[in-house]
Image 1 (cartoon, rainbow, N blue to C red):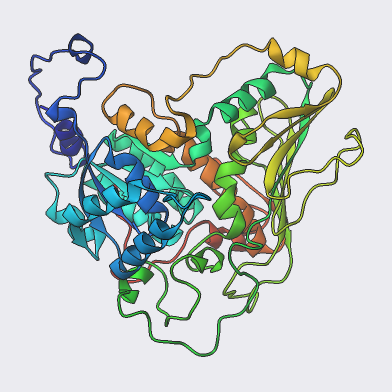
Image 2: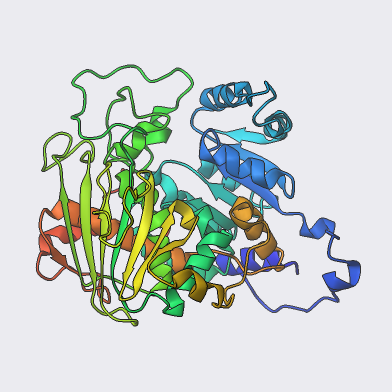
Length: 475
């Protein structure tokens, strides 16, 4: 029985007695050898935006079988737009898109991912989910229920409860899982984790994280327009809504600005938290916060039922039970930033685009988004860093090969970089900042029982209500 067949049988409760076949180890055939049975058949769900890049990265090493998208008109537009981008010398910026278009044209196409997964039970091994956040969990759980390996774009889910469900499903099905926070595979990011853990900046009790999003990327802080419009003729609006509440279409949701809409995304924290909170959460092994508070500019629309997230927020997490000692982490978005460190030289500027600053007893470590460019403020730290050994495995190809790492893990060639076992906990921390935003007051968090004892009314924001016909599979 092939590994993928065993996983499929296990996921559906049909695994019985197994007779071990004779297998020729891959190393006997050579590292570059890829047997036909090792060719991973991949399907994509949401392929007009980030999903197009994910499939592009995978297409050289996998067989793209089927694609599901609620607007293939936009997919076609995406190709045209991106293929028109040029370098300074006039050459195509992304020449690989010409070949990718042929891959897309050969693949079976579906508007409804549920139909695709049902009709391709036997010829899909793995699924990439790159839809708006509100359908991540239902798409991933449906695929996992069919025994498929899953790669899900960040944030992993729309809610805390969904994150826990995906973590449990990954454990019970045994499929190979990966969240699409590519920086987790970067050499720089892994080096930053090693440097933090080395102790060369001393005890860390304070961390600052910031991003300029939403800012120039998408709008927030506005109420829903009073006039609805007809959806684009190529968009299946009912399928786009998926589990979200029934509502009419308004301009500015599709294809990208949905991130700022409460029904579909998680704002800046839901978007960039996976690229920025990732490293302090990982390096300091923070676990779950004991207290969270979010302060913000006004919501877009009525605070009791907001349409869009605030323009800017500041979230303070207290990790009182962190194994390396208590840590207070503060998140800034919307262009807000932490103060310039007192020990910084004159004219020193933090990167306004985003970054992380670890405040230690003997100095500071700062890195950019995705863990890039780790650097120090403090005497003698560069020299001390040179002596810190490499302790984390490096991912072949780094952050540009995050998808390839997932394929190699499916083929049992390499450990997966960011499995749901880790990614679900990181996602839960991200969403707790949004829960505190909804609560409008500090919340104490009982992670063991997934409760908010001092603000029980806020517990409703840990989960969500699903539109009829879109119940989450219980695996």
